[in-house]
Image 1 (cartoon, helix red, strand yellow):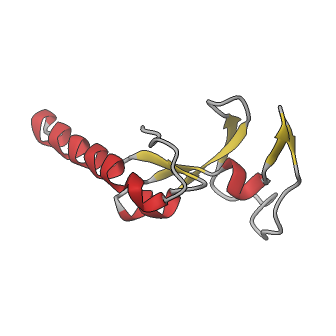
Image 2 (cartoon, helix red, strand yellow; image 1 turned 90 degrees about the horizontal axis):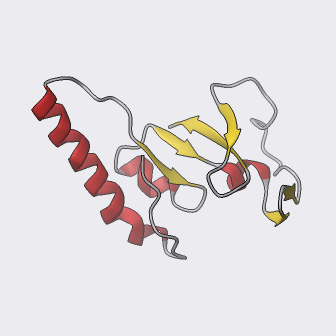
Length: 104
């Protein structure tokens, strides 16, 4: 799992995600076992993370809306998947807010 440094330019996160994928591949070779998952990418950079091999994403803001304060969201975006029973897990976000962890 990795979280790239925040940047307004998602493309600049590519080297971070690429390096984690390379590390995973090195571990697979050394251990001789498949490591099928890469947890990387958040609402602002998930497209780049998926292009670099992410299998799990953290999409709190993209699915739940912007935060106005601690634990207060502006409301869910108008997305037909929000609130449906799809393969996702609701979890406590590492930065103090809720997030959805979504398989890529």
